[in-house]
Image 1 (tube, rainbow, N blue to C red):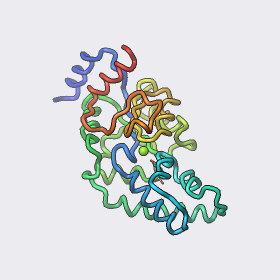
Image 2: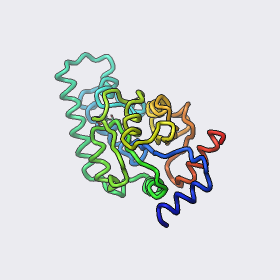
Image 3: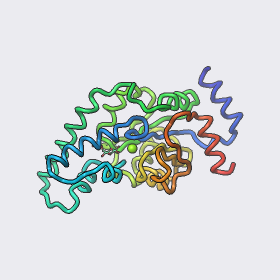
Image 4: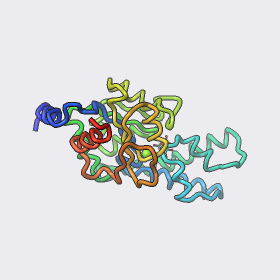
Length: 236
Ligand code: BG6
Ligand code: MG
């Protein structure tokens, strides 16, 4: 099926297609690297004899490296030099763990959804707070899907600020109101909504209070399905 035929087909079905761009968070949406972030933080916390559980880790979803460390340290007094050393130590653990990622580590439905957007002529951007995002998409073999990459180096104010997603939308040349964001973190959903974008929460319902749509995972999602759901949400 050629790109243009698919696009025409979609436009016939949804003359008011609500989206022209899709922005994907990475960790916890396209691949389970949120677990690898957790394991790397857990190792550091154990070395520092700080209590840190999977439940505590939930608050770190989508949160940048430095802010994550400060949350783990709670009120523990540390110098800037110690902060830098601990961030480097965690990152070393994390970088080691992502070195073996392959396309097999894509979460179910991720490849199909990216293909469906690409074939439908939708612009695709990555919107991840991680400074390791490029290595991860390269290792997963999905870098070619992205028309732009917004990552931990792209903006000063990360999620829940809207800046990263607005930067991504600008890079793909799509108005924010025509972008849909896929996010596993409440902070990311807040960022998408602050940016004036459609926000789809990926994960358990209890994690999101304000997403336009919530899906347990990406399994079975296509451009057609997303367009249908968004058209219903927007009432057009
Ligand atoms: C986000 C993750 O995508 O990236 C966070 O959800 C992580 O857990 C953040 O802290 C920053 O990642 P990195 O790779 O720059 O330390
Ligand atoms: Mg995430």
